[in-house]
View (cartoon, rainbow, N blue to C red):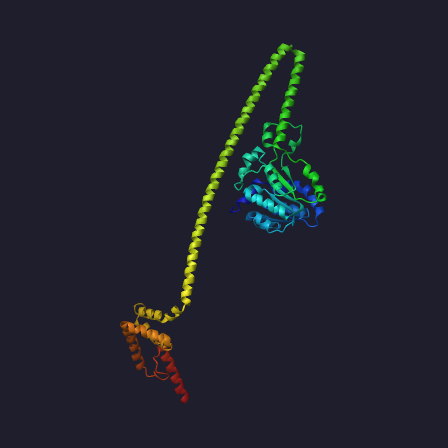
Length: 461
């Protein structure tokens, strides 16, 4: 994107540097065992953005390197003197040797890539990681209804949501020994099992982000320090909130039923109580049906909006594809014309370097001389005639060619003789002519000859 748009977009919607750095500290427990496992700690961060992860890695004693294609993001890294440069994520991985990195990370980059490219990226990461090395890929969590139906599509560069089961399977299929889904950034109060939950908490309270942390195969002794980390549970899933909500509803009904039974035993006869209970249950059933109907309506509206947004996204993708095709055609046309111009230039250079071009130089000079009277007047032509005559006289081959042309063109022979006769008359009128030789001289030659004569006369006296 041009004009620093994406950096401005990230600054507004992703959060401050301090907030992002705080969130990234959730990964530090996975990194601690690597410090004891290896003496050096090279880290490659794909799509490094503003460099919060690079800054945290330097603080923790690692040796990070970030790559990104967005100039605005790289300017933010350069302003803090962070180790980052412009490069494509997959190209950067392919440049690295096998078993050279302890961590390969990519925060909110997977959802920007076509799935085929993501497959290649995960496979390359598995190659360059050392045994027990970690791949960390963080992405928006589509389990969260707000994220999956709205916030994900706020970013125009997103491709499609990536379910966590797909990402973990991709890592295992690419050769990683194990993969852990780490849900992130949920509201802390939702971890309280006794907290009251509403429908909105179920729909929007799921962890908005998650990461797949995949580990490369290694010896058991190398993997053992990570076992507890890979066995622990992280974040809150949609299933968890839904089950908690159902349990809370059941508990409320049970409490209500107990209270009703207590009131029944104290104040009401069984028949009257049964009647009241039937009315209460009917009212509750009605309210439950209303709630379910509202929920279904809201869910249908959300799904409709999601379908419309997906259709608009597909239309934009098709339009972009058409524009790319037109651009490729234009580039091919430009390249074709460039090749033709280059070929014409080579032919022109070959022509100028050829023997025929050098041999016909006098004829071209003669042609220009014949055009001079109309352009520069006969005086200019007369001044040039002695030079041409001398040049031709000193080159026998050219002289023979010129004589052959003149014999075939009486008119041209007549014109040249007239010019040379006029020049000869002017030379005969010059009293100094003939001191050096009998060849016709130009006016400048005659002035030089005159000056030489005066110098000789002075030296004699």
